[in-house]
Length: 163
Image (cartoon, rainbow, N blue to C red):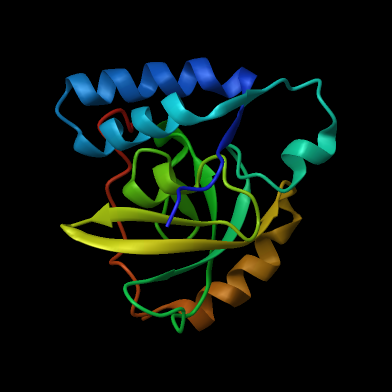
């Protein structure tokens, strides 16, 4: 299966690369995955057509996704992709320095991407991307339904740079 196209906002690229390099220098192997994704990603100017980035996962996006280890029967989950210093709870946030966070960055709704977590390969499929914070109420209802899912275990580690 070919890897999906990844597009990163130009304004986020530098901070993400710097963050990943620092974490990789500290021995974080997930940061190496993020560096690889950033290397193959297209840069999209923040001034480009807003429609180009609207359906893409960017920092701060609320992402609804499915994960699985074999079939897409696992309940969906919704989280906000955040920098490690913004990470507060695995129920609502997903650190960019987690394997899943690194796999999601730059994907568009409908894309599927493999990632490794705890020595097991999983796939994530992006169902939808929302840039607004008005999804908090919807998120709370989705979380109650998705707790106890059979997907990859939650990655409570926000990365080496978290406060």
